[in-house]
Image 1 (cartoon, helix red, strand yellow):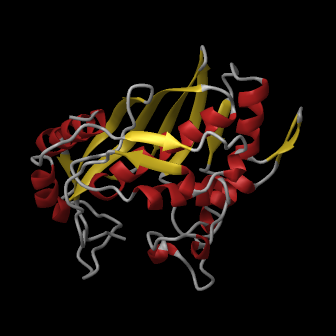
Image 2: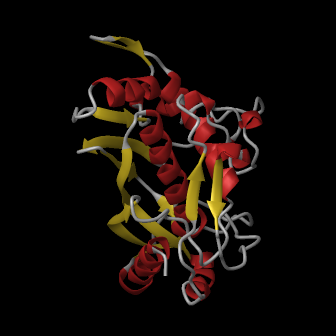
Length: 276
């Protein structure tokens, strides 16, 4: 069993067996038919993945690896907030008539800020520090800008990453205020693990540990039967992540520079209802 499968199964069991239901409460999300989308949740879930041991991608079901990378490049490399720059439709429900999601995600990473060393956006500041001051305890990105929240079509879910170098290994903590476990967990874990690999490679570092902190980890009511069946499925060993070692500049990566070797997985789950 891969470590991603083990962590996912344990988290889901914990939420289903020990979580708190929102039934009887006023909730914002709605199903397509207008019905309130209730959840069962746990507060303060912390999952850890040793990237030096294996790549954490779920094998219980197929994760659309290339599309997950495409989104992380959309946010961190293109610094875009326009769905026309994406090759998937995951943001369509939150886009306006111009195709933007407002001043969220990539927009925030692309805003330049003044530092003693010069003017950088948040991504370039991370790249600068990893090369010039890797043992700094201040290598942090933050998308939760209160000044711009009113212009975001969705408040950032995965909102902050803290990078920390120990020895020659790059570690990172992803802070997430809220997560739809069935829809987003495997996707987020995969793409932020890839991001750490990318940043490590261009900074001449090795990968270390990825820590995922989820404030509100929830399973929607209509997802419970799907999750119960999913965690009973057969699990497979983790695949090997192959990255084009010729890439030395973060902005040169494309989705074609990443390959999963020996990725065995269960069937993809189609037509998962999404609460908006």
